[in-house]
Image (tube, rainbow, N blue to C red):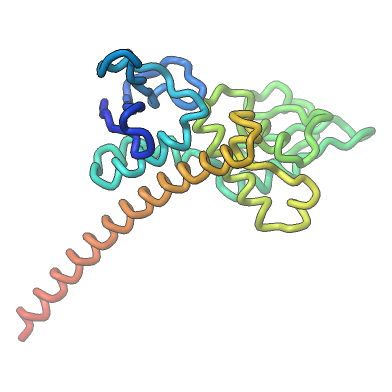
Length: 234
C-alpha cells in the first residue's frame, strides 16, 4: 500500500507518504516518507525517509488520514502496537545483576531466570550482565534482545516502559525517564518531544476510533440478529 497525504500543519511544504512496501533504513520508519516542495517552483522533490524532526507532524497528519481510510489504519496498526506488555516489562525490571553471585541466565521469551550453566548453550537464554540494573535502559536492552528495530518500534517500547514507570511514583522518582523522543535522542528539546508525543497519541486515538467503530458495527449486527428472533417468536 502506498498513500500520499498532505501535512495538516504545513500542507504547502510537506507532502507525506506511507509506503508499506518500503524497507530501506530510516530514522523513524522505512515506511514513512516525505516530499519537500522545491523553493523555485511548484514541483515536489523525490520522497526521502522521514527525519525525526518531522515525526510529530507526520503522525498527526497520518492519524487524520486514518480517520478516512480503514485500509490504511489496518496497515499501520502493527507499527504502533508492537510495544511490550506489562508482564514483559515487569520481568525485565526484575532481571538484575548481583555481584559475587553465581552466573545467572534469563529468557525474555519464557520470562524465567536460571543459574543452570547449560542454559548458556540455549539460544533462548542470555547471561545477566553488570549493566542490567532494572533501569529503563536495562529493560529496553533485555526486551529488544539486541535485535534491530526501526525508530517507531523503539518508540513503542520506550512509550510502554515510561507509561509503566509513571504508574509507580517510587520507580519514576528513582529513574525519572524522559519523554520517548528525548530518551531515543530524536531531540533534546522538551517541547519538540512533546509535539512528537502528541502525534503518537493522535495515531493511537485513531486506532481506538477504528476499533470502536468495529465494535459498534458488531453490536449493531448482534442487535439486529436478536431483534429478528424476537419478531419471529411473536
